[in-house]
Amino acid sequence: MYDKYLIVGEEFKNIFEGGQVTGFQFGLRLPYYRGVVCSLVGKTELTVDGELVDYDMMYVTIGGKTIKMTELENEPVHKWEFGATGIVKVEKPGGLKAGEHQLSLRQHMKISYVPGGFWGSDAKVLNLAG
Amino acid sequence: MTQKHNIKRGVSLYSFQDEYFHRKMTLEDIIATTQKLDIPGIEIIGDQMIPNYPNISNEFVKQWHGWMDKYERTPVCLDMFLDWNKFKGRVMTEDEKFASVTMDIINANKLGCTVIRVIHDVQPELLEKLEPVARKFNVKLALEIHAPSYYDSPFEQRLVETFRLVQSPYLCFTLDMGVFTKRLPRIVKERFLREGMKKEIVEYLAEAYDTGTLPSSHELGTKEETLPKKIMEMGGREEDIYWAMMGTHGVYANPALLKEYIPYTSHIHGKCYDLLPEYREYSIPYEEIVPILIEGGYTGYIDTEYEGNRWIQDAFDVDSTEQVRRHQMMLKKLLGEA
Image 1: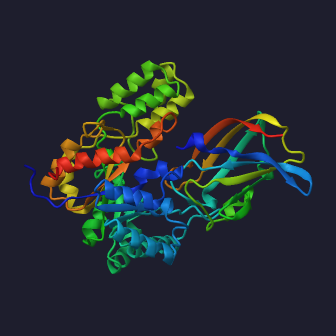
Image 2: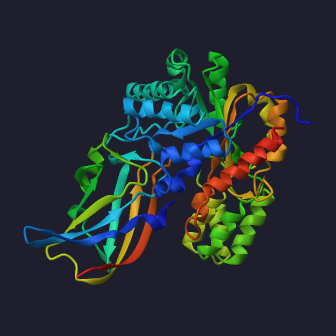
Image 3: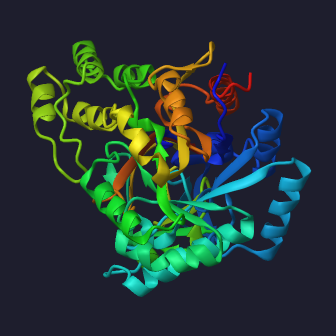
């Protein structure tokens, strides 16, 4: 559910820190009908232009807190509210080139009453301003 | 003329989730809409529309009651979940589960709700332990029966046994009307086609569903293998199996069983997928079920729970308000209010 709304293109851009491009970011919403504590947010499988992004390079800022995505499982209290957009930052020195990029994403949700949880997916072609 | 009864109408705000997700409607907008649609009772999923649930702020509680007064609505039901897998590498202990649902009970009481829709992975033993807490806070724990399960399913029968033993009005069922999905929703068929399923497979699935001949285990956690095989034989793809499983897990259960179990049923989810302009649900024959509820002496709420959104949102704008309006018009008619 909500699959086609997972990637929020308005947030897609390179990140400048200390005069350097340190990576890029995009907005992420969850494929579920309620808010959950972050430990129930499973893996985000992201490919950019066909290339799989290392999950270890991804951070999300949600509800005023920035969490390394591999550490989400250690957050049994902090909420990711229903419909809220998390800002996902991908560490990548130099960022992405200006122009069109194909983002494909699969998002796992660890929901107790669904054995094995479930996945949502979205794919969008987004333009990165120069 | 409709027989005298004491069935009340309500709506689960879940029905408006699409507008809320897109921030087209706030919680207050939605509550105001329920007044415009003349729906007396309100049901809410804490995790969906209450900030930082289950840690509800005093400000929220105050605002909530302010809205209930301003829009003259009655809080009825709070929907809970038991996230027993939220701690890394282990499941919740029984004490943690007890504490989690206790918090929901206290929250329901704060919100003025007298029923909690209990998710179906809460065990009878835990419910039994919680009964004194439920009684103390005057909140009924109503475990949800949801397709493909029904009153006569093994887990529900264990609950019935517990209910008979404990004999408390605070332990009971919520019944989801999706158990009476008599034919495959039209919006499901259309989605199958949009997802690229071959027309012959879609027609087979609809025909088999409608005639009750679809190969299905109808048992939670049991893998169904005949249907995937059939779909592949018909030239289907892997993703067709996924969509077929998602779209056909409904059931048409025997309404005659209702009478026996109405005394254990305190709440009803008026599930709906597709309300026609003439106030009829395309796939759930409310006109057959509501008279049985009246006859059987059901006295709780029927809360509209619109769920067509997820089947159409890939291609269309969702109009939850109109779907809820039609469902309520239908209920009014069937309950003799219009």
